[in-house]
Length: 151
Image 1 (tube, helix red, strand yellow):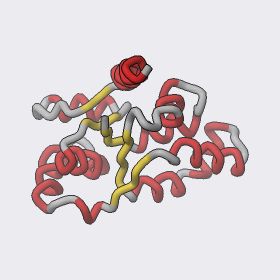
Image 2 (cartoon, rainbow, N blue to C red):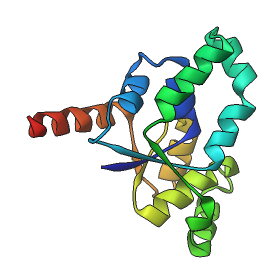
Image 3 (cartoon, rainbow, N blue to C red):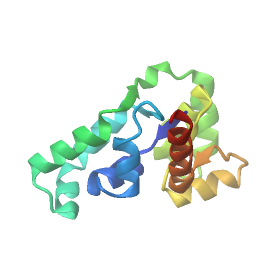
Image 4 (cartoon, rainbow, N blue to C red):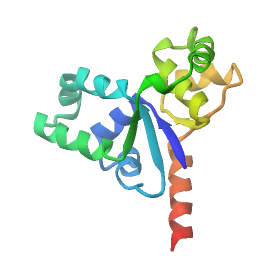
């Protein structure tokens, strides 16, 4: 199963690699495929100081956390998204949160759900009949089901 991963999920994983989100990102190789826009790498670096302050991790520990969290994420260039999907995504996010346009455009391009903890985004887009989201608990259940099937 392929999933679009947004920044707040990655940040949550960075801050707590042992939590449910961290576990999903680190321990789902071969079961779940995570996709994210290239710009997410820049977002992580842009917020390094804040992440260090919040997490109380050293820079070295945060770098290791980033490696663990991002090692199985497939980062894809935004250039792969069609103009039509950028425009459709903009129409959806323009009065919700324009910063999330990448995730919606990727969802439309690859016909995949977005894994997001951004309640404002989820609620705002559901009001516009965009419901291609998956919650952490749902994703955890999917992974566990896939694990059982493989045994």
